[in-house]
Amino acid sequence: MQADLPRLTGGVLTLETLICLRAGEWARDDARGELRPLDRECIKVAGLGGQAHPWRCRFYRDASGCAIYAHRPVQCSALFCMNTDPLEDLLAREPLLDRAKALEALASLAHIPGFYGMPDGTRALLPDLVTAHEEQNPVAPVLEAAVRLGFAPKGASGVTGEETTMEESERQNLLDGISKAVRTEAAFRDLCVERAGIPAAMLPFLLGRPMADLLAEVGLRPAATTPERSLL
Image (cartoon, rainbow, N blue to C red):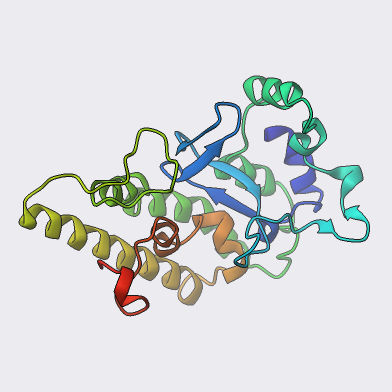
């Protein structure tokens, strides 16, 4: 949330600890009790990954709990599992943090916390890279195409999980479009690192999760990796 900007500029939350969930991604709305596409981007603490608990908070310590408890994000402060009203009130009242606001706040600093060696020229590119990536690689059309092919998260709101009746040519066009989107998005990421000098650790914040990973979450994977579940 925008109230967390001091934690960002103060170095408590560095960009490598954050991830952007982009508009169109599937996400659980706990207030409504449903899984649905995001209508706008949101920034959250990145999970540690892994199969069992991919979204386990990276600041949680088994022996001692939250490692940044005194400076934890405002949503964490408002969360109480026995009564979610304070958190729901906060979400309804306070504006969410997005990449544009975060980068605007960081632009006033001499260095980006956690990335002190980044040249000024590279820093200046960051907002334009975010904009270009969104324009060239939007999430919503790709995941909507996957839904039409019968690929959606289990329990997604308003989705049957069955392929829409269509001609084979239309089905192939959808597959071709998805495949092209995956390749284009992957190439954009590679160029950010190889040509623009963006640290790979910053990409989850700047660009969100790779398109291939978002498709894998709904069961659609490249043919080279899982032939039995592939369509690409």
